[in-house]
Length: 331
Length: 200
Image (cartoon, rainbow over all chains, first blue to last red):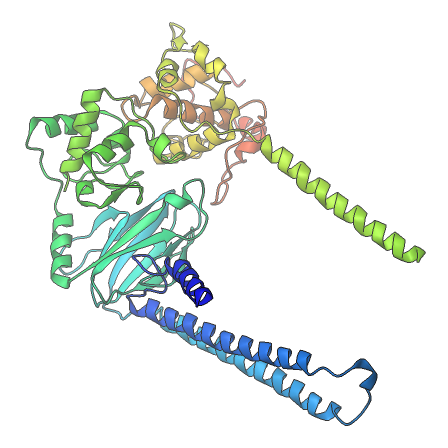
């Protein structure tokens, strides 16, 4: 009884990581569901075979004959037949698993032609996201966050300007590499609204571990509303603090790397900040977006994420306070 | 029996050799060049306080630059960052791949304001007549020093130990780690200022 309880407890502990917003075993989208079925099927088949082999081995050991009795007593023929049958079964099962894997992975990559297309560029170490022009309005750019409508195929075009990254949102789709000089595509689809976390899955440098992406699946109406907000230029600063922050942002090196639509800032090296206040996290999933975390990040980026390409810009405390207030106001 | 012993000692030698390689590799890795990713703000501020000769050519860097070991000339990481900044800040739109264009070339062995770091830093930070813009408000002083270090390696007369990472795309000129590009120097000055003298 006690051992059974301990066993159950250890299984619970071991599988407690399976689930939540980033899990291949908690799939919420068609491609990920196919992959999950494939994983479970393979595990079931292999587990059954392993148990059979262990039983056979155990029986053979228990029923072993003494060495002296070994002579041709006519038991060689059934043994040959058993070995041949085992080899044939192995070939068949491996071929079956290979075919199943082939058809699953081939089937999950096909999006219909009306699918929404989003271009994702892997940068060291953040995700640049481009929404193409559509019938509802012009395209726009965002970072580290992809919004998608529920129950609709979304085709991702994956590109990279620097090194190889890999896009992996286990709850929604398989893994696909972003290779410099190529454009790979991946089908993404969510059946249920929710926030699904993804992660760069190919070692890409110092801050590979801090390169997360959030996929936010919402009802089509909510998605269109979000897209309409993103298409707008940045809000005009109303109060004096944010206006002062905007002025400092434009005068300092910030504007040379970041774009804020509707202002003179038009740099393309860093993430587009037009609606940064509306994103859940900053610095690719490093911290939640709050005025405090924005200030901490701007004050000393190399301590929070060593090696990233944002330099420490020397600011007075008033400038820092104003700029972080301005960033927070860009909803 | 004898054969058995010798094959055993062979295996032991091979194992010892592998172990030696692994350990020496580990020790070599331990001595790798450390990366200074975060420059202390007082040092960054001090890097701006270099002294330039009255004619704007040459001068002396601040003491702190020597104290931190001249990292922008000798450190491969900083040179690589400089190379990225060269692309990100659009230097190529005037200076091309280093061969020049609208702006002067770095690859013909000519330095209008001398090849010293301070001259290059001053050129980038404050701009120069005839079209070189000032990057004072667009880059931090650390970035300016990184970029200057990279620009210096493009037209360097002497080969350097440190080099930035290689290009992924087609090379249009000798790579930075190949020492001075003498052949290109011989092509003669490109876009030379009228005040400058004959070929070096």
